Length: 421
Image (cartoon, rainbow, N blue to C red; front, top):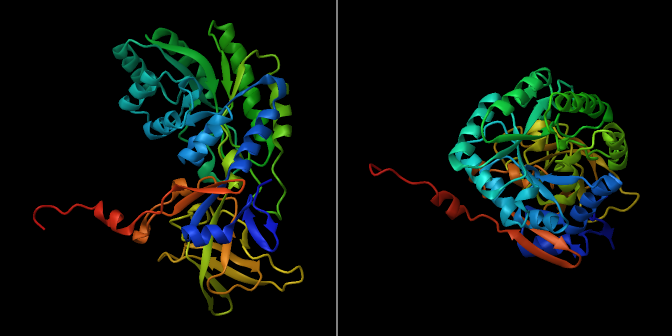
């Protein structure tokens, strides 16, 4: 569920008109709904009832400070993968003891900053990383809490570029070698094993891969404890999918996921940690864009938008589906015809949808690209010297610009000429 309804023939963001946002801020612009962010976090938490998990929102999905602060106010922690994301989480009011640090290439500086902050846990992805973390912790006279990211070699049945739990992926330690590396933790100074971590991929639409991975983790918890290791928490990552395409089967509900996890973990006596990102932010945001031209091609129609692949790269990168709807609500009996929705970037790949059925559109009509709250603004770039676009957060009848539209002159001004030019 989201909070972008049609009311009196116009699509709204909660109680704010998208037409008003376009007139005030311009297009293209990302628009996020506070009510949707809060609802998704609460629905996920409620799926686990009395277990009281720690929900560490995956900052990489949408790192806007206003989004992070909204979730922090509702008790969310954070899963971060860089020094920048760590700083964002702390500045947004997320307590350090609710932050886990993931990622395969943690630098010495990132380790130092995380140890200084006092984060909950490092999700360690390799033995060289473990050795480095031990050395940094010794130098700082601190003890680093660690959780080894286990690669369970499970096919998540998702897009190849967002699958992270197979043996061929770069993430984690092969589950067959887990006991060896936990023994190494015991031998190293200033690192302490506190948990186990896994994340098998993103946008999963089937519970079976989760079940296979978690069963391996549950078995590993018991084996590690039998070998004398203390395992306080089990971090099951994120990855539960969201509905993008209304014509496809919906992913499992958080309640179904919660029931499966609780049944699997009921005898483990572990704190459960989760790292949802897309599930929280995906359908809480839309990309509001304007039609520049409608072009009749050879056997097809092109609807050319002012938003491009540099603003929302998911369709070009993943062939991802996003629903595209007019801001003006079509009449129930409106005729529809296929059209390609494309952007202004000088690439054939700058295409949001091909042969998408749509009602008639004209220049200056406003269009919404839905489910753009996750991996939208955070993956945007300035290709073709296109300035980064604005972001807006609404709450009820209020709206606020939470990131200003970038100025093209300022963008060009980042370039510096050498003294011979």
